[in-house]
Length: 248
Image (cartoon, rainbow, N blue to C red; front, top):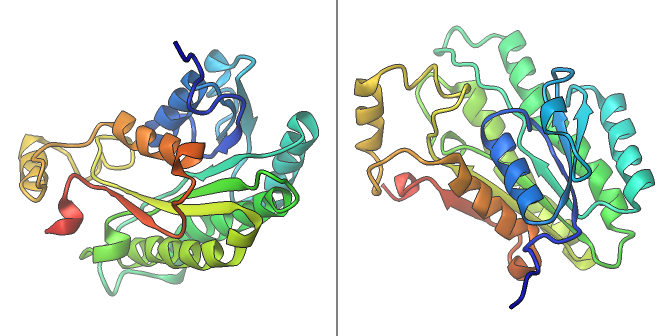
């Protein structure tokens, strides 16, 4: 019997790990043998889960200096970084005419600029590793299909798709894989503002081929696959985990 786990011994950093998708990804990575540096903004929010395989990193992803210190700490303590999961993000809706520069700047600082900074820091280390590495970014269905009232948020998630493809083309020669995951609607703190009641849930699930909301563990399993050696021929792709919404 083979007891080898999917991510045995891999070193990963997951941003936005204290709740929702990030929490599910972190849990699944640890269960599959990875050493996970779990990022959260709120100090102490991950302490109860900390152990030898889950190490909390408290910093705001928009703080470039803090991000650099975090990446260098992982390199110093583990000697390498095998996987970066850029999950942290914010959503703020505004109808046209109400989308001011402050809203756009706030969204882009977290969803775009922070992601680009972290992936550049991680890629510098991965390029020097014989084994390369894996970078996994999160987009949204609205980054592909758009959504009324989400001009700035849609634009930020569309940017994640395009720069993910560009980065994949640039770093493939270093054995670095770059993929983007597009989850469907899950009942998390981020989406609770949209799924406010049973009627809203029913309306949304009516647009899904599978007819149900997604479980965070289903997204986590896709991310674990992309972080593993099993996905050794997947790069520059956007993985649809929307329950068929992208196909409608």
